[in-house]
Image (cartoon, rainbow over all chains, first blue to last red):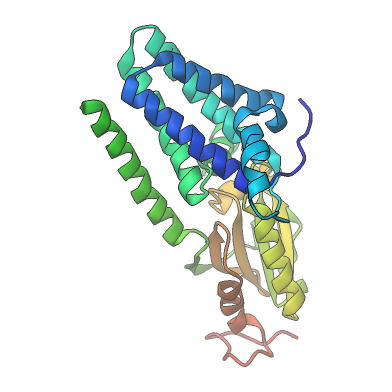
Amino acid sequence: MSPDPPVDPRGPRFAAWVTTAVLAVVILTGSGWLLAAQAVVFALGAFAGLRYAPYPILFRTLVAPRLAPSATREAAAPLRFAQGVGFVFAAAGAIAYLAGIPVLGILATVFALVAAFLNAAFGLCLGCETYLLIRRLTTKGAPA
Amino acid sequence: MWRIAVLVLALAGATAFGLWWRARNGRLADVTSQPADGPLAALGVDPSAADVTLVQFSSAFCQPCRATRSILADVARMVPGVRHVEVDAESHLDVVRALDIRRTPTTLVVDRTGRIVTRASGQPRKADVIAAIAPHIPDSETALPDGGTPGP
């Protein structure tokens, strides 16, 4: 785990569109193995770091050189956190598919797809948005 | 066939949610002006130090917090009598519960008497912030709010 430098915000949006497409194919084909591959992609971004994550590498090598350079930078920590949330859903879905419980597999994939699509189309990071709420609920203290 | 239906439904639902979220994200909502001296004191914020204090709650895993910080810091620099304070939500969870902060960034607009006059969850627009604070700045051209007293 090494801290990532801030990134071009168009990178994560591109990665979110690729993720959305992959998860859409998972829903259409019911392929547990493809979902397992996406779980590995999430795990690389969350645990190894964004510089090792496949979609950002794709963005940096193929897409970014064709775009005008951007001075805007965005912190990497929220992105890695979101990849971790994605990993939990993708891993759970892949296990469900491969264990022969397709209903649970589809359910988990739909959650991950909705989150990836909201990130891609609206720049809304669902995992980040719920982070404080989860901390509020899981940390001891006077109930609200 | 049903797989296509699942996909279309998921994307349609997400689009509807995304549009709703975008429409209200960062909007300054009028709140029934509530005194917040207690929670603010717990944060070490002294509202009487400025005409308007912009209290921004941030967290580590927050994409729009950075942009919000620069917007609010800009407003504080441009408008005399306005102060910007950023608070780490996670290290003040009791205050977060007391003020019902649900997400980051959340911005509270606090007047000199320690009342929360407006709040915004999400990244607010600079023009909206300036419009919201104007009535609470004594030497601004806007009329004072009902019962408002000019600062010393």
